[in-house]
Image (cartoon, rainbow, N blue to C red; front, side, top):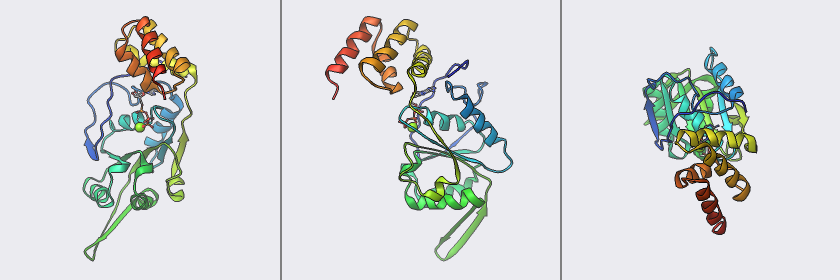
Length: 238
Ligand SMILES: Nc1ncnc2c1ncn2[C@@H]1O[C@H](COP(=O)(O)OP(=O)(O)OP(=O)(O)O)[C@@H](O)[C@H]1O
Ligand SMILES: [Mg+2]
């Protein structure tokens, strides 16, 4: 993972469907994400395609999937929806009213099957159709769908086939160290403490979750703290 970009603070928004203004910052798209330069390039290619190319990110926890979605919210006319919060009518209403260019679905595997079905037509033809109270309304959109999932078991096969599916792998120790160093550096953690945290989390706690590094980074002030906290967490580990 080669990397020159520095991350910026991003926090997760747990909201149903949100209209997001293009953020007024000079940071490049995906600038908060360390590594994944090939994935960033694929997104850029999708975004500059005349016709929609939908992308699904599948992967283990804390592999930056949601971070990619948050970055996509910088795009014009982007709408964010959390799979578990969506309802068919809610999503369809949004599609009719807001006509989003980018529909961002985090954790799509939690989206009810009927909602996944509604996406099939949108993604294939751009057509959204709804019959309510014996009245039918139709519209035609040009919408790119970007989504994430921890797995694909709960997803309809025809929906999967409409995406370019990218399976993120667990970080190697080298990547883990690098991501940890960047994130903790951003939080003001000294370099040597950040290095000790990456090593302790990976080796001692046997965790590959970057979120554990962030927790330790916020608790520890010194390398000795890192040693003590990781020993304590190990004692109480399940
Ligand atoms: N490559 C990376 N660049 C920058 N931050 C990263 C990277 N990988 C992980 N992180 C950090 O790890 C944390 C988790 O990232 P994120 O929420 O995107 O994970 P996720 O893949 O969506 O995980 P989950 O499946 O649990 O939802 C965030 O604080 C994020 O900043
Ligand atoms: Mg996530």
